[in-house]
Image (cartoon, rainbow, N blue to C red; front, side, top):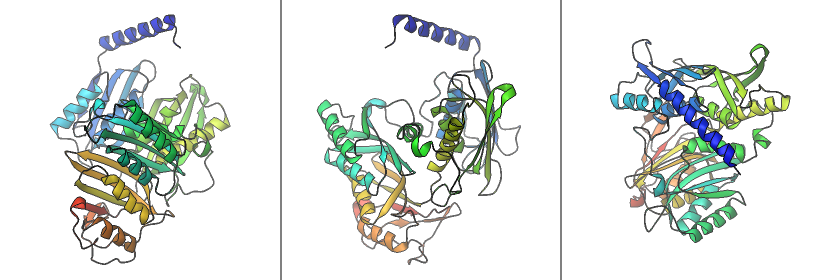
Amino acid sequence: MVRWGEMVEEEEDDEYAKLVRRMNPPRVVIDNDSCGNATVIRVDRVNKHGILLEAVQVLVDLNLVITKAYISSDGNWFMHVFNVTDQDGSKLHNREVIDHIQKCLESDGYLVPPANGYALPEDQFTSIELTGADRPGLLSEVCAVLATLSCNIVKAEVWTHDGRTAAVIQVTDEATGRAVHDAGRLSRVQELLRDVMRGDGTCNHGGTGISAERRLHTLMLDSVGGGGAEEAGGGGDESGGCGVARPKVVVMDCAERRYTVVILRCRDRPKLLFDTLCALADLQYVVFHGTVDAEGASKDKEAYQEYYIRHVDGHPVRSDAERARLVRCLEAAVERRASNGLELEVWTEDRVGLLSEITRVFRENSLSIIRAAITTRDGKAEDTFYVSDAYGNPVDGRTMDAVGEQLGHAVLRVKRGGHDAPVKHEAEGGAVSVLGSLLKSSFQGLRLIRSYS
């Protein structure tokens, strides 16, 4: 309970913070001249809790690549520099994107929908968050329950890691195309999903104002109460799962400045900076200074991140147990999105129950879903799945032939070295063959991309 005196004090603090921000308006400079291979974005503004993560989310929501970053936010002032490129490694020249970045980073509320993104208004869907132990066929069961209750999945993000799973799912009422408002029906949805998740699930109406990926990091931490597999100290197995080398995390003391220094080295990948900052934020650490370097031409280039942090209570890391937890949670944040698998893209006409049918076919062919991103845009389903066999191994060609025969004829592309290549009509050493010979209208536009990297 918040007492009246505390509420008044909080409101006065908010008004003072607003006054300080009005007296010191933010300054954002987007520069294409000072660096030869990246656009430089400089942000100077009054500091506030969480501002670094919000700024990075603006950039990653636009699918920009952050190749370098310099972070400084001691005292009441925030000064960050980001070197960014587009997905092709080019500088930013799209005026709409540049104006969007400028507008977002200069506003009090950073997290507005991205210029090239897609989001439903929050009153148009019901948001469901699920966490629990992962098992084969789990997503299929969840989709079947929602289809039975006439809930259409319009957007979803699903992650798995270390035997746990988390999902953020947006659904609409099949009859109205809007959020589900009936309390009895929502209670039934929650009851059945709790049964599927074996007691671990929530059902929330509307949105949280937080991106699904941001929320997934929190859910994966909360699913074990900030402990368990996510808390255990690093070490032991050098593999981070699915054959991916475990990131190297070093936590040291900087006694003279009362900071804890965190150094992370791992293979670079998209959204790596966002993921590590999410982990630090969820563990209630504040980044005061930092350096990020992920430049290089190699596909397997290493990313280097160095942070000077304190807990929100003002103290550096104070125990070996806290240090071990910090290491393991950073490792997990990196590994969750780095899992290998066969990348499957489904582009087809959307309809209620489509996702349930697709995931049922996966389950019947012993495919395990590592990650999934589900989107519906203008009546079209645009879904991406990362799958392995039931034992976490690469999927063989015969299995994908069987999947193709059940889903129907498909357009097939094999991704090698970041590019789609024509596929042969037979499987060679596990390569995916052309899927099926019969055309089923409900599955036109299935696109398969091979991506073991």
